[in-house]
Amino acid sequence: LAHCDATGLTIAQIARANAVAQLGEHAVQEKLDSVWSAMASCVQAGLSGQGVLPGYLQVPRRAAGMAARLREREAELQPIGELANEWLQAYAIAVNEENAAGMRVVTAPTNGAAGIIPAVGYYAKQFKHVPFEQLAGDYLLTAGAVGSLYKMNASISGAEAGCQGEVGSACSMAAAGLAAVLGATPSQIENAAEIAMEHNLGLTCDPVGGFV
Image (cartoon, rainbow, N blue to C red; front, side):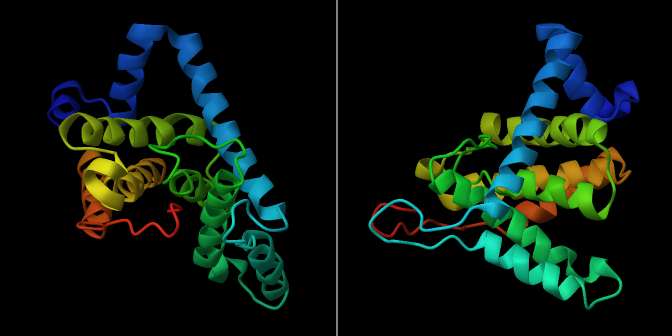
């Protein structure tokens, strides 16, 4: 926030300038486009995935069924946006199931929490009409800046900090990114990140049979 005040830049602009100084403009934008494309593809793949997840627990996939039921309900509802929060859950579960199936996900900030940032971004795309350029720009850059603060000053590791470290960080990153693309000020973005983390304080993991 001090950097934002001193420069007049947004959190995303500071993050981009830092990355460009290290890698160059073309490489940074190419990476951002690649990451958001992978996230969106993972949501879409997870929403159509069927069957049982690998492992002896024999957990059935749920996201595709959730999506089918939501589409049926959408046909009956006006406006469609009434189901936005339920779609958000389906997007996150879709990515988590792709991760559990050993498919391609984006570590954001960890594989264990990989569903949250793609889900919130996909929600922004579908229900807030945020374009690709903003999602592959301000959304990811702001989320990444917040994530780097957790990584440097605390932890994003479940082994060190429980699910607060993984899921809490991801929720905080996603909240900051969403606030950014909806036009929030740096202070509002920080507040969104803080509120999201508050709801995850002390969250622990209780693996069943080695699966989180």
